[in-house]
Amino acid sequence: MDGAPAHILRSDGAVVELAVARWHDAATVEDGWLLDRCTGPVVDLGCGPGRLVAALVARGVPVLGVDQSAAAQRQCRRRRAPMVRRDLFSRLPAEGCWDHVLLADGNIGIGGDPVRLLRRAARLLAPGGTVLVETDPRPDLLWSGTARIRTSAGTGRPVPWACVGADALAGLAGAAGLVRTARHEGPRSFAELGAAPPAGRPPGRRTAGRPT
Image (cartoon, rainbow, N blue to C red):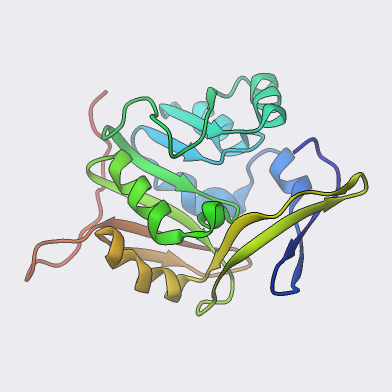
């Protein structure tokens, strides 16, 4: 989180380079699909250095970042990006009142249990809100286990982690009372989830933010 090159070492033997430079840079056109769907108040879970929070502030969208890292908190302060240093599973401000929940940069993996995380995200939403998720480029990937962060300073302790592709996410969403309403495929892949509609009614996406 301080900007040093890093890799994630998964318990299945995979070694994945982390996009540290991108996290510390400003939001780019690659983030546009997510940002354009943020039409009302947003909470960014695992906001890291706060690039998406800062981008939404610049757009005039009410937003709050959430992260446990002290380094992330320092970076957000430098960006003047509002955030709270807190476990996302603990009590958060404005529960049940957010129009959008962001899980970008692989944060669907936090805690190693994507269904539990999606249920948590759903509880934060106002009626008609959406969960915006960055997914693994491999659509059918569904893996959970433990992972460690490795930098030049050493390797961290194992923590529960998961990786989820867009198709796998669509399969998990129902267990959290959600349904996929949109997706984007490219160098980075994203999906939008909304509340599952009553039987017989097709899902729809909110097109305008809640008055604030």
